Image (cartoon, rainbow, N blue to C red; front, top):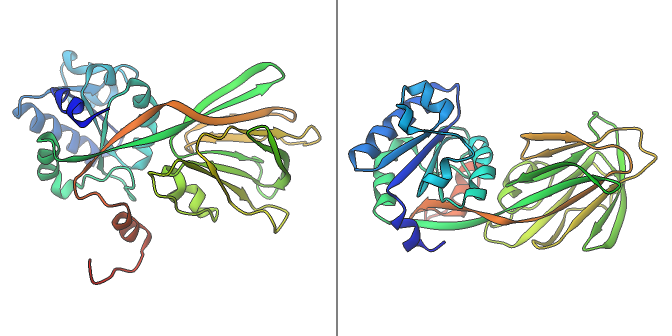
Length: 299
């Protein structure tokens, strides 16, 4: 989506946020008035609308809000953005995050500079970035038994602490290895600063077209994170002799389980998420701030 096209659709703006946090509700209510004073039509996700007393004409479901908006603003932390992104990517609407959480790798508008930064975005001063998501299918024989999608990562685990599973890994129908471990993290560049990083995976620039596969406590010392092309098709076969039902999570939010003999297929989704950032957005500056990297003279 070109920036010119984004600007033409800014007339209606949707608001989504994490329920249960007073600071989120306060920020959403403030944003609603701020935008309306500037002539924008504002729509709110239905549960959020009920919390701040919005009128019925402002209410939309999570599944439809993006279809009626030129921009959706998500208020909360990265978890809120992950949950919204999986839905909004399918609706082909750009998304802007206001940070009311802890890390803020994805929600980079600060509450302290909310009006100033948002005013600049509405005037067309922003960075438009495209992020890809993952599709995951669990098949049992010829039947699809579960399906999900993820912006950060798909994680396959034994489901029980200190218990290993054994699985075969194939990439592009080429056998890679048989592994015994606590599981495997399949991460996008977006997710490389999340769970994958905790598991020893590399930090990847979000503009890369790549995936990283991070073994979780593998039995073999030779098992290391593997970076592959973003268009690769990953296939994980849960070996028949396992006595565990592995758990599968998407972004730590969608959960389902497999049984021995199931096949987990992971590949890039055709839909992409369009993220808007302030013009001063800098991935390396965010890493310095969030990961405690040392600053230099240029800071």
